[in-house]
Length: 135
Image (cartoon, rainbow, N blue to C red; front, side, top):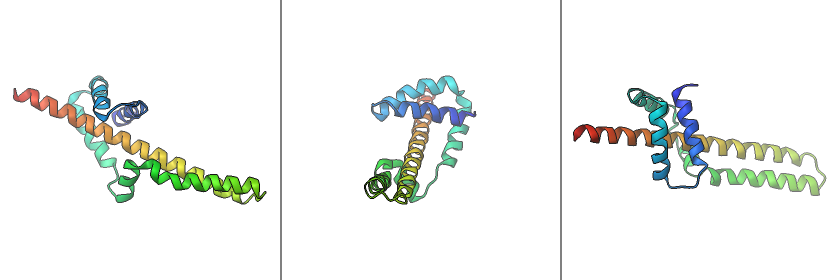
């Protein structure tokens, strides 16, 4: 596993906690400092930034993953409801497709948000080191 994947997993773990973004960045700074040597942090940051999609849909999913996935959760739930109540097995196909798409969208948004947090944290580390050098 490369440094980019390690840092992304650390950021995903940090996303599970309820705290402000500044607090998450502060906690990740210590972990990143131990995991990746400073000279390599810029390369890792550039690699993660290059992997980030820059289209409208990716931005929308990153910022509002739950809102984007909500219609698919609804489709899955309605398919389940109609499949059980109407005894129509074909409605279970809508359930499977809706739930699958909702989970994939949520997972993709989660990874995008974690990568964005990694980039922000590495930028904060670089900014502080530059401020220390100027003193």
